Length: 102
Image (spheres, rainbow, N blue to C red):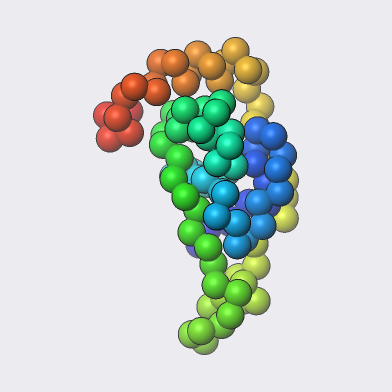
């Protein structure tokens, strides 16, 4: 089950569970679309994976036991611990490498 982290780990922008602006990697590292496109070039600065749109969990319990009421979004805010130089180095190394080849 996705954690649905509440913020961009780079700029700390709020990313509520229904945000179409959230991007995640396979480890659920979470960033806003602006940071992904303008700072990260689609490369997760934590793992080097690609960043894709985060699914939106339905607000309504369309099927028994589903929806945000049963599985609320995460509340723990996170920040990226790498320096801008570290992020830039990994981005430059991987930005032209296809995600399937990373």
